[in-house]
Length: 252
Image (cartoon, rainbow, N blue to C red; front, top):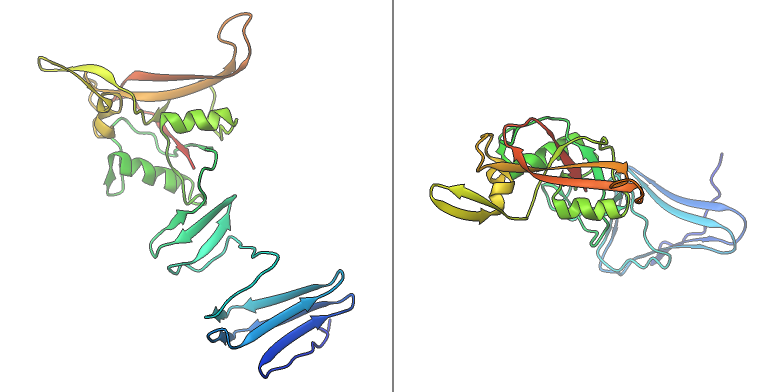
């Protein structure tokens, strides 16, 4: 199929107009277009129900001047991993800082992805990481297509639950979660209240000592008791031995 020729003016303007029921493409193959200081302009116009596209295949479009897109710019999931790159994936915007993709979308409702692939006791270890850093690394390894995958805490689970975003978690199954609440524990002769006592010392301990406990989450679709409403019925328990083998709750 032959692409219709476009009306072009190279000095100082490259212009493509579509006035009929046709589709025009400016296709740049293995090319480099450099628009310097806003002094050069590429205009692609369409009227009526026409469409006009600027497509760059395996090349670069560099604009040092101003880009004006009256109907917006649509970003896809594919983007080169260069500092400053932006992409849109799974309903979220991400920016690349030179090392990793950083979520740019704010105040988005929480979504549980599911459990980690690995089962572990309260002493988290993955590759060269330990503790909470290892927890995030396990979640990212389990869900590599989700750049913001991480180990969930209690408040994030409650947020996800309120939006019915429970992912692939199994019913009536315990999973490790991060707690920010406090529980009294005995160390020597001192009575203390630290959140670490709910999190196996930041998930660095697999001890079964009574002074060291972790927090787990489980849920069912049930009523609290006869005659009450049926729905997502959650249960957080912070008295679980750090020697217990469980998967983690991962979300985005």
